[in-house]
Image 1 (tube, rainbow, N blue to C red):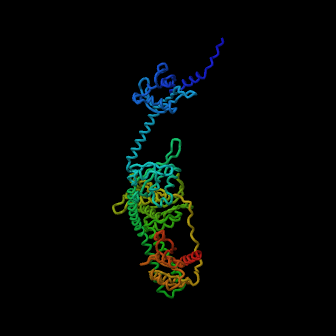
Image 2 (cartoon, helix red, strand yellow):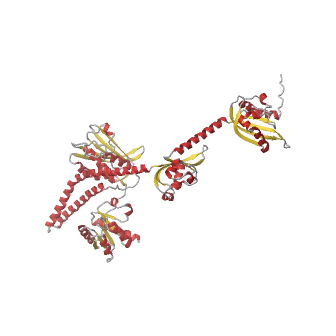
Image 3 (cartoon, helix red, strand yellow):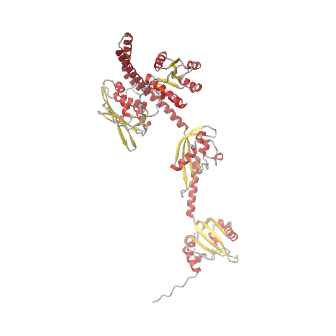
Length: 638
């Protein structure tokens, strides 16, 4: 059986099928008076009317009573007829009386001759979209109220260039500007002049973009010009599409916190210095006996030589060599005491811990006394570390003294070094192990706390182990302690490895000759040291002029021509640094060599280290080497 062919559809029928297939939009036509002449399935779905119920009715029935009273339907028709289109959002009414939020478009339909034939009406239910927008608006409003209500934080926004686009009450309270004064201003307004000069505002914005956040503490400027310490956080802001539109900035005034931290730092510094002095007493007690022995040798040798003027040259030389060696040993002891006692820490140095500890072994053994055995288990080929050697000595001495105190009847203390790699990098492990009674678990977990001590009142400050812990942290490492009751305790410091090279020792200078006829002005307030220096300079072939002080030296320079000024630093009245600065100003061609019994790095401020310093007590070789180096430097500079 053959079915008849389907009847071809007209374009009008095809268009009607298309319109009816749209269910998310109400698509229908009105006559010039506003009566409905067509109806689609989308209109039926969300307005609730079937086609036979609504065709021929006026479209105003979809408007609320309030809008009808305001003649909104007639105004919509008039606008569309006059301008070609009317578009609006508003409440509309379904057949069952419920309301929905609609987006409506009304387009005029005209003939080729321009006569008005009616209107095309498109309506969409956007109730959910409106609810979301309303919720977003209310959320934004609440957020704005929240931000405005925060008075302890400056919370505001910047555009992409860093100009201020919003301002809250906290910002006004902290910075002193009203909203009207800062909107549109660049946020660099709050930076100090030096920070602006080095480009700090731009660096902050670039860092926020590159790393997702910028955070710092720095000084900022209020409207009245006063400074305050600020904790600053800057986050970039992006749209949902990923477009960068600006920055969120949060600033908190942390001036009181910084002042508190500074006060705490000063207090801790004073307490740690107290602890260092306590440890210095331990060290000095151990050294005193050896120092007296050295002085006995010196005094005895000098006395013997004075009473034996006809002593054979070989024997006299032997006694003099003994005295020189003894003086070197005494110098080493005083150097250790001076280095340990200084208040200011040295700048970090690249060192081999095994070599440093080997040199400290004798000093530590003297500190311990005869009841204790000190063992050094030092690894060869140890990785270099960059630390403050004075801090290391203080930390190690504290650990050794604690170990000694844990063994009142004597025992063994072992100091060892090892290369040790961890997950966070490579480093050197320094261990101090004792054979004492150990520490109970409830006490062990508190030993790194400042002021915590188990010693009797007056026997300890409780800062020893906390100083060790603090030193390890400041060196970029860590400290830990492990103990077993009845077996002993081990304190470990892990210090990160450095790739920097250790400074090489200079080769000894064998040629002691100075430039012939060198004229040296020797400035020294101590008559004995001045005599000794004069003798050494004479032995080196110099012509020597003497001055007991800085002002006398300047007076002598007015009368004599000199090639070098060699001055002590610590003198009454004008000190050596002041003299050197004056000589440099008035006689720039005359080099100055300074001498001091203190470590130069400890004694001389960083901004005044313009002059070479010879360490006391000096000898012929070091004096000659220093003067030759001084003259070479001068000749190279000419």
